[in-house]
Amino acid sequence: MLVAFVLMAVITGLVSGPAGLGLADLVGVLQGGGDPQTRLILLEIRAPRVVAALLIGAALGLSGGLFQALLRNPLAEPYLLGVSSGAALGAVLALVTGIAAANGAILPLAALVGSLAAIGLVFRVARVAGAMDTRVLILAGVVTSAFLSACITLLLVLGPAEALRSAYFWTLGSLSGVSWGMNLILAVYTLPATFFAFRLARDLNALSLGEEAASALGTDVERAKRAAFVIGSLLAAVTVAAAGIIGFVGLVVPHGVRLLWGGDHRRLLPMSCLAGGGILAFADAAARGPWGPVEIPIGVVTALVGVPFFLVLLRRGMTQ
Amino acid sequence: MTLRLDGVSVTYPGSTTAALDGIDLAFEPGTHTAILGPNGAGKSTLLRVLAGLLECDSGEATLDGQNARTWKRREFARRLAFVSSAEESAFPTRVTDYVALGRNPYLDGWRAPSLNDQAAVMQALEHTDLVLLADRYVGSLSAGELQRARIARALAQQPEILLLDEPTAHLDLGHELAAFELLAQLARELSLTIVSVTHNLNMASRFCGRVVLIAGGRVVADGPPESVLTPENIARAFEWPVETLAQPGLGIVALPVSRADG
Image: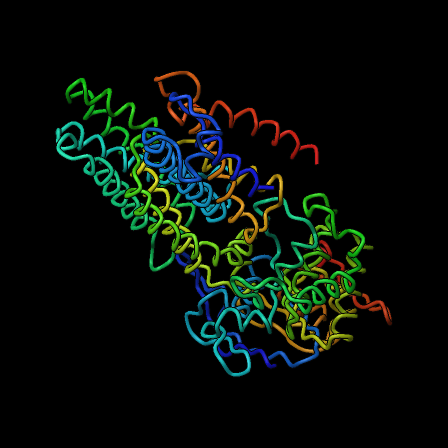
């Protein structure tokens, strides 16, 4: 069912957009035909966007699943522990100083460096005598986020006005302008992380009972927590670098998967990948949508569609 | 498998008094031992040291001669199961899945649960009389059913040793008796070594071949119930005067008397 959903999302993503290309054009291009402009739009503009949406959505869904398991909290999400504000600070610094204008690769790189720095800081603070305390982890993450947000606001208030506008749009997230090259980097980065994340599923199941119980069930708790944090953070960091801050997917997808198919992480993690990828591909298609040249920020779409869907699921889950 | 404590002392960070103070105990295979003592005596600490969950300041806990902290956790969990006094599942879980968590030490990251794993879970459900509740959510169970589910999860580990921290807390007298009968039956049928921390002197004296009375991190008395649960020993451990009554087949009860009367 989820696979069909993802396929539908891919097709919708390919035929959606202001150029008015339909299914017939898509079939034509897939058969090697179509006029050059149609080929260009479908293969070089839309296809990379759809692939990026799949990869980023999958990474966000997976990252959210990892954080919810690690923190034993269904409200946890990929950006909770400072990944996004670190990335935003990096991006804003690049925008305010003007170095972002020099080369298109600088903004994502600055965001990546910022988020990695934030992750490193939070990780250092939460590790005491070789053990990671997840309560300290949450506090350290939230406080670090608040501090970084203050830095961002300060920079934006003091910086040039156009930086403020660019930074605002960057924080809304967008998949416009992704290329096959960016997708290659995303894939090289996320696929191994996904592999290791799936291997953690068994330990995450045990961790849902608490650390002591997990240890009594034969799980190396510190190793599992460390791995979940590092993999989850790195996945979130690379998505932010590639497409800015896309809220809601990382929170809602694993939660929805849990409500629909249960909390076993051996199912939950792969399904969160599929559902996250499919939902983001749909959201991006809707963002480009039939409303002409103006693109709706993808974060707005995920929230507008995601919230009602999520509330329905929540009601359903409560009555079970 | 023999489980031993040799000269174990533990002091929690920030505390000035030792939670455990030079404890030597050995638990022989196939026996059911009750650990009794007042609040703060070190009972739970003792159990956590046995389970390899807590580092000792001095001395060591060993399973088959190997330090409990140096065992690989997976290997250790196939031999010894620990049921803590309380824990909460972070997400809603069905009873079967909850019990299946006991197979954790046998599963690899990728491999699906084998027939063997499924059989172990089924057997654990049968032993604890939970088959009919297998599809229920753990959160909807009564206290007695939840306790059985926790014991079932431990049985799914197919351990040789079972450690239980207050297995009958929050249970009424009928369910408490049922739980101890279950443990006695498991000890017999699966020849398990069981160590239970409990506050119920009567159940301990009735179902356990051996009783260890501890207070202030030290062993006050150790042996068969009738020789350990004397008014003098109990009064010394609990710092409260008691009288005891013994009924053949029904164990010993301790009746606290008013301090002025003692």
